[in-house]
Image (tube, rainbow, N blue to C red; front, side, top):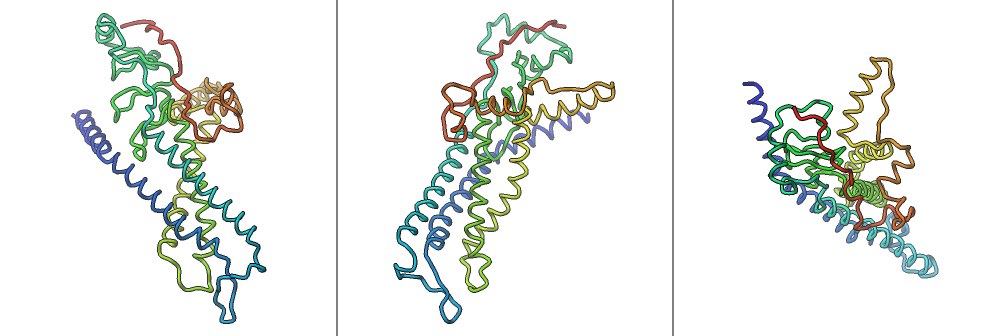
Amino acid sequence: MTTTFLERVEHVLGFLLKLVGPLFVIFASLLIGSIAVVHFVIILPTLLSPTDKNEDGGTDVIEDSTTISHTYLFLYSLFHYTLSFFLLFNVAFNYTLTIITSPGHPPKESDYSEERILEFKSIKTIKRSETYRFCIHCRLPKEERTHHCQLCGTCVLKMDHHCPWVNNCVGANNHRYFMLFLVYLWISCVYVCILSYPHVFNGESSFIPFSMLMSFVITLTIAFALGGLLGWQIYLILSNQTTIEFLHNRTQTKKAKARGEIYKNPYDIGTLQNFKQFFKVNNSNFNWFTFALPTLQHPGTLNKKIEPLLEIV
């Protein structure tokens, strides 16, 4: 009775998350777009307008070309506008690719013969040691590091988590885009905070544009909240784990410790090698110095051969 009730609650929550997923994406897109508009229309022009104190304690725009070099202003403007466009493009690019890129899936039912499907359906019991190679929900074999997503209703290669903000699972094929989206969004928020800080906390002027104030507050809040998530994702990448695998490894570590043994993550090949594997920097077509630049290349499937079950009970 209790199990049935919990399953119904889980089903309802999953259905609601599916409905609000697109709304989360729309909200995030509008928020990023609004801050970008404020940044380019208000913050940058204010930053690049040279001012000086007048006799009344206020500020006046300096128009004397002998005071500030036009060359300096041009280079200063060019730097900030170039950096701003670069950050905005990378935020939008990686966010979009995270949303539209399939996280990767193992072979589906249509990829097998009818005889094999009947064989899979006839399986009644799966050994615990075999569950990592056979999905009890899909009733199909799966590759290593593959997990079933209840919201998507399918198995996902190297699944990290299902993110409502992208209305998609984060897995083998789009994890890199998700990670770079977090990196560029965090850098952008810190950048906007730094540029707007002098104007928000300027004691010489009582007038602060509301849009600039809200932009500062929102980006500061996002920077703090995002910093924790970004740090967590960096740790997972450098240790070659996903969020799901971290929970599993933590349990295995406790069990091994109780037996007087030491458990080691089987996928951890060293910090530097883990980083290279995640960003594909060891690929001949992917330069080390360009790992964070926008690209349509993704790690692809895990290319692990799906072996038959050792035993069908």
